[in-house]
Length: 206
Image (tube, rainbow, N blue to C red; front, side):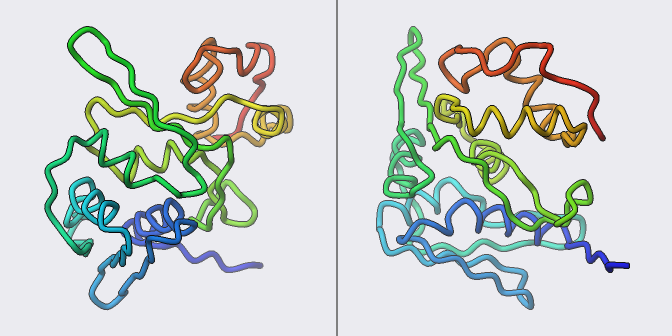
C-alpha cells in the first residue's frame, strides 16, 4: 500500500504561488522550510513592485506564520495596473480587458485556457494532483483585488472535454463541480458563450 504524506496548509499555499509564477522567467521562487518563508526574486522592477503591493507580507495558519519576502517593496499604482504589469510576459497570461461600468472601472485579467496540475496531497486524485484553472489559483493567492476579476479565455474543445470526461466517469471533484455550477448557463469565463448543457453533468464524487 502506498503511503500518503499530507502537506501542511502553508506548504499548499506556497505550492499555489509556485504554480502561478514558475513559468515566468522574471520571477524565481524559493521556499525556506526552516524559516517558513517564501522568497520571490524578481528581475523586473515593475513586477517586483506589483508583487510587493498585491501579496501579503505574511499569512497565518493557526500557530504558524508563513512569511513572504519580495524586493523591492512599496508601490502606489492602481491594482488593475499592477496586475497587468505582474503577469505581462507570463505564458499563462492571455489579456487584460478594461470595462467602464458607470463610475466604476473594472479590469478582467484573462488567463490562457489551460488546466494546471501540481502535487497538492489531493486524496481525490490517484496521483495526489490538484487540477484547476489559473484564475482559481489567482483568487486564492491574491485575497484582495477589488475591481479586478480573474478569468479564463474562451473555452475550446480540450477544456470542455476535460470537464465532460470527468463528469461522465463520475470522477469530478468537489472543486470541479463548484466550477461547473459557477459557470453553468454563462459558459465562457467572461463573454457568455455556452460551456455545457445541463444534461452533461452526472453524479459526482465528493
